Every structure is written in C-alpha cells, then in structure tokens.
Length: 596
Image (cartoon, rainbow, N blue to C red; front, side):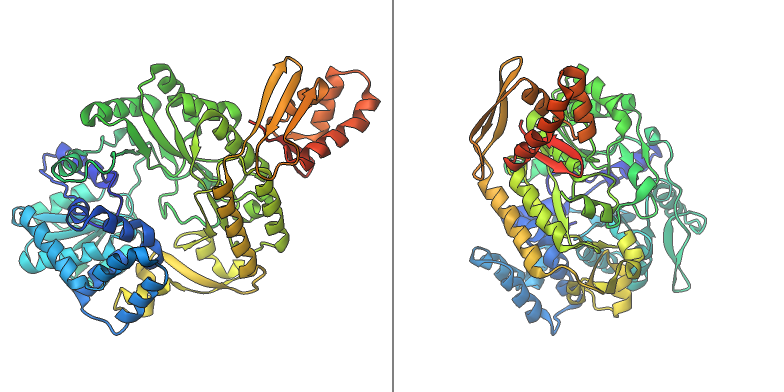
C-alpha cells in the first residue's frame, strides 16, 4: 500500500510468495502504491512519500481521516503542513485538505482492478508510512467480505507494535511479528485447513476477544535456504502503468539479516532489527546465482541490498567473483565506514557503485558517544577513497547526542573546512529516537526525558496516549541537561548547506617524476593554490594516504633517509604546515593526507 518507494518491489512479501509457491499455494502480490501514483500523479505521490514524509506522515493522515472521519485538530494539522512547505506545494496541500474524496477515489479505482472476492486471505506488509492505508483498506475488505482473513506483517508489526495493532483494530485477524519465514506459510495452511494457530510461533491471533501473542518466531539460520523473491507482479504492475517512463526500477536483494557490528556493540541510536539482531548471510556462490537469475528474468542491471550491513567476508568471496565475472550490474550496499583503500577499490571493481557508509559524524568524541567503533579520520579517509575510485557514498551527518560539547561543534566546522572537496552528506540533522534503540530502551540513563511518541501521531490515531506509544516506532524527547543550543546546530546545518553549494573545488596530487609531486588546490577556501613537494616531503605525504601515527611517520623517514636529527626537527614543521594549508588533517597524534 502507499506510501513507500515506487522504484523497487517489496522484498519481504516477494520471499513469502516464493515460500507459498513451494507449498503449492497460489498467491498474487498487488502494488496499489503504483496505482495511486499513476492516478494522482507521481509528483504528488513523492511529495507525500518523501518531501514531507516522516516530518508529518501525511500519507497516514489522509487514510486516517477517511477511516475515522473529521477531527477537531484537522485544521491545526493542515496549518502545520502549510507552515513547513512553500508556495510551490500549495496545490498539493489543497488536495490533502480533502482526504475523504481523494481516498474514496483511490479505493474505487483499486477495487475496480482487484477482484478481492477471489481470495481467501489478504495480507498487508506495512513499514513506516503504510500503516493507515493498510488499516483502512483492510477495514473496507472486511466490511465487504467478512470471511476473508486479514493478516498484517512488516516493520510496523515488530514486538509490541504488532500486538497493539491487532488489539486496536478488530478487523485484523492475524499479525506476523518479526521474520515471517517460519510463521506466515504455516499460518496460511492453518487458515485454509481451519486448524488452531496457537502453536505457530511469531503470530498474534484473537481468542475470546483477546489478542494473544505466541512468542518470537524462529530465525532463519541458513539464508541459502531462503527462496529467491518473486517480483513478477511488481514488474507486471509497472509495465501496465504509465510510470515506467518516469524512473528505472531497482531490484532489492537480501544477502544478510541482522547486524554483525550490532552483535558486538549496538550503535546507541539504532533501532533496526528488533529481536532479530543476530547476523546471518548468504554464501557468495548462492548470492551470485540469485543475482544472475534476477538479472536475466527482469532485465534490470541495478540492485539494492536491503541488508543493514555488508558481510565483511564478501571482500574475500563475493566481490572478487563479481570483479572477475564483470556482469555489468550496479549494486548499492550499506557498509561499515572503517573500510581500507583496497576494499573501496574492490567495491568499485565489483560493481558496487553506491554505498551508505555508517559515517554519521566527523568527530571522534561524538562517534564514541554513538558507539560507532570508528574515528573521524577513518571516516574521512573512506570518503576520500570513495571520491578517488568513483563510489558514491550516501551518508548522513547526525547531531544532538547526549554528551556532546560545544567544542565538538567547533571541531566539526574546522573539519568541514578541510574536506569540502570530498562528498558532502545527503542529510544533516538531529538523530531520531527509534524504538528498540539503546537510547530508547535506557533513555533515562542517557539523560533523555519526557520520551513520548512524535506529536504528529495524535492527529492520526484516535487512541489513548499509552496505546499510541505501543503502536509507533518514532519518539521525541527532551534533554535533562541540555548542553547544545539551537544556534550551534543551526550553524552546523548552514555549514553543511554551504558545503553542498560550494563543492566543486578540488585538492589533487599529480606526479612530475618519481620523487616530485604537485598539489593543486582549487577549493574556495584554499590557502595555497599550488605546492611542489620533493623527495622526503612527497614520500611523507604519500605515506599518510592512510592515517598514520607520528611515531610511525618518524620511523618510516628514519628507515629511508639519513640525518635523523635533521628529520626529527623538520618533520613536525612540515606536517603542521600541511595541516594549516588544509592538505592534511591531524587528530591526536595521527595524520591523514587529503589530496586525491
């Protein structure tokens, strides 16, 4: 259901369809999000899904007003929506202002193309801004065909959220929480055979008017046993729509579940995975065959891994195979940011042209507060190598973490001044308090008080506050001892915006011969436009292509050059000059060259 990305099929229900096919059960997947975008316009769809999206949840609000009727707070909501948009969106706001007509029109079209009466079970996958559209259409189906079993699953059904969803909306018969590989297929068979479902782990069902949770589902240990997702319905829906000319689809792949870093040290703001943190991945050969199959079947070369983090073993197994085979595909992956130079180079050679590295900050103290397990210089050198090898790093700069100091923000400004030739963040903003994250679970320990659901949810769900709190994933809070002012965060966002606008200058190194290097600096804040480094200077600068401790630099010079006393006095001055000219960065006793 709306609202979710149009450019990819749904991997979770694609896998579930394949499971059912293995059991001889007929199943169709519908993509009403495509129908909505075609009917109401892709620009309007993207306005709701992305432009406003998580700020105001307008998609959920639209379907809530259709289902629950007018609310005294409707005008407050609409005025808030107007206040955060500009004049170019006024026509969209006007359409949102008449939610009942819009949703009725959409449901009428949907029912005209979907013969719901032929199905015994209708399942909804719901994540982020799909809840109310799913709830509202499920209610309509139940009112028309009471015998049809309604099943919900997806990210919005994890843990207490799934139980509250079932408890609050009586027309939902079953909820699958967490990984549904081992719960949904047997649930379908039990419904068909009219057998009890209480022995199926991972579901919520109704007994004597009460919602009963059967306990966490079993996790799939061997991902090679997970079938290839069935995406045929998506591509047929896209082909039959008018949207195929607006974008090129991506094929989602799932090569791993859970997070290997989170098993060691969960990032404090991360709420992903819930009860399924345990890391598991597919074997390289199995995944390679899956990529080949999906590429042949759908004639699409662009893939998007939905994994929370890439399996580091793939640098020894999968990526060399892709490099050797050269299948002319492009893959997006989420990775940990502590990659070395050879690993970034291999990503590009294997067709991983875009990544989302978990950078999150360029300040080591703040990274420690997050428990990211990396330093600022590690993040910066990874961004440098992405620039060098042509890998697009889609990263975020987050702030607002408990324990930050004004000095952290001052250092961030200095850092950005030195690296504005490198890829800027896609987004810059405060971290979000998500359910299941350590910050949420132990909020008082971190000085986060008055934790409550996003204020916007009271405009959507006509439920008591404690039940809304059970139902949602996103929360707001106050700081017990606020140390950072809005002025500081505002200036950081302005700095990042300037970085985006002024990017285009370069810091590059070229070689005249084996021991002479020219540094060309065309950045707007350059100190020296051109520098010639000879001999030992060039050697030291190249040696610091990866971050190096001063003692290691000194040892390196002593091993290669005579005159140790002269070197000892000269080296700090040279390094400091390179830092002053923003050609290197220093943190603690470590140095990193910045030129590409």
